[in-house]
Amino acid sequence: MPPGLMRSGAGTSRRSGFECVSIDYQQAREALGARLRELRTETGLNGKGFAGRLGWQRSKVSRLENGKQTEVDAETWAQGAERPDVADELRCASSP
Image (cartoon, rainbow, N blue to C red; front, side):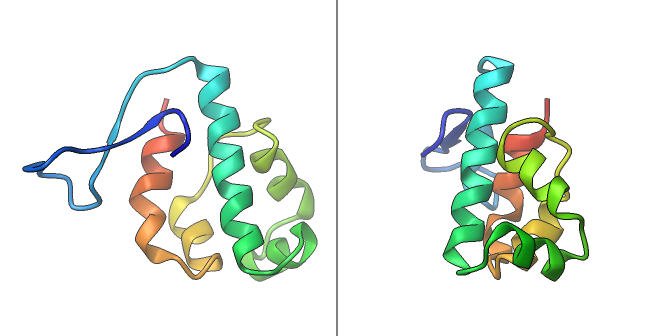
């Protein structure tokens, strides 16, 4: 599991089972980018193809995956990756 994400213990009230934890900002950006890339590659699409699926520019996908931009639309990315179950995880990881 990437830094910045921690699976909650038993009895958590969070539906997704994830809680936000505070870590270094740059580490968090890099961890988020790595997770986004992992989700994209699971689709079998390259950056350009994934960007097209989302209706975004390729440069936006690149900036997100390389930790240069952290304002990610978690719902859109999760839907594009055909993994709506990770939307809460991505929202948590992208919050400051």
